[in-house]
Amino acid sequence: MGNVTANPRECDLISSNAIQIATGFRDYRAVGTRMSEGRFASCSVADDLGSEGKLGLVIRVHEPSPVSPEGLENTKVTTGGHDLPGRLRPGFASRRKDATGQLVAFVYGWTPDYRHLLSIEVTAGAPGRDSLADAVEFFRQLKPILLVPA
Image 1 (cartoon, rainbow, N blue to C red):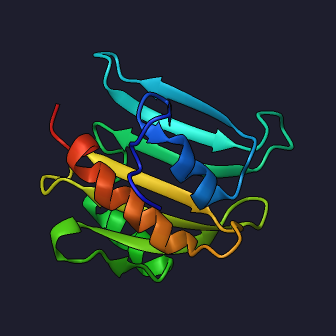
Image 2: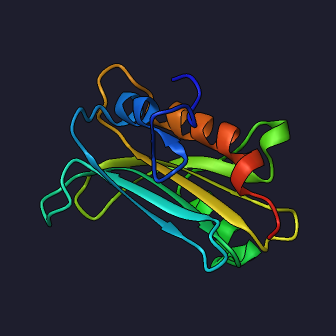
Image 3: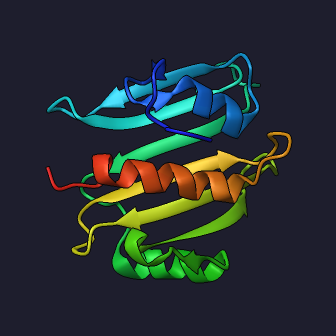
């Protein structure tokens, strides 16, 4: 997938090329949000912003985390999640179906104090791609940039 923050970028951070590779979308819309102090908060990528649009990638930073430690553990267990590799912890990766029945790979990673949560979701469907591996790779590259105390 390469550098997920290379230019040209969407949402002032995410590489257009990485988006196309991970989602399989050639044409898409990206919408980003920022926190009150101007830091990156989210980036959502869909093939169409209308109600029929398919969401392909969602990256969110939650400060504070909306999920308790117990809630994160329950999500990991109920989705059959697996802990991230050593230096990416704490966090886990898993798959689930969304409301439309699409398979979505996701990664939840957080700071040791559980105050900051980074979530990455990649909808399966890009030809020849492993959406879970792509979600983990986005997380690996974005963690040092986005999962830091304010």
